[in-house]
Image (cartoon, rainbow, N blue to C red; front, side, top):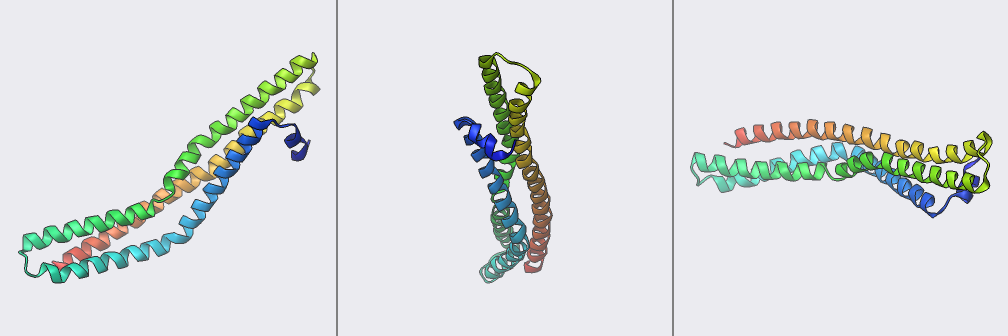
Length: 183
């Protein structure tokens, strides 16, 4: 049975679940591709903004004592690193949410499909394997779709978290070097 035949027999709940999983899949790939393309640019931008923030501070710090300069520069550095981290993490939590929810949406679709199949089988009074296999097989497709949405979300989430951690470590080291140079 091809998908169009299955789609014709699907009820509103099943179709809604398909659209939810489709939206989750589109969101996953969009976030992942945008973050993938923007990672290098984000890192370079973070270094530039960090250097600019501390350079701007340099002139303001001259009249202050060493301890005051150190505290002000450290505060500005931490504030800028925090802003860069927030920028780098945009959308990553959505991937985590999709990775967690998609299998359950698929599983709900499976349960719903099996329930509908059993109701139809009960109404027809025939429970032969040829009557059971089609509807139950169709219902199991929802589990596969849920997993097909969840797996890329999990992989993308884990990759982006690792990448962000590595990049933020580099930004912190760069900021620390700037801080030392400034003082």
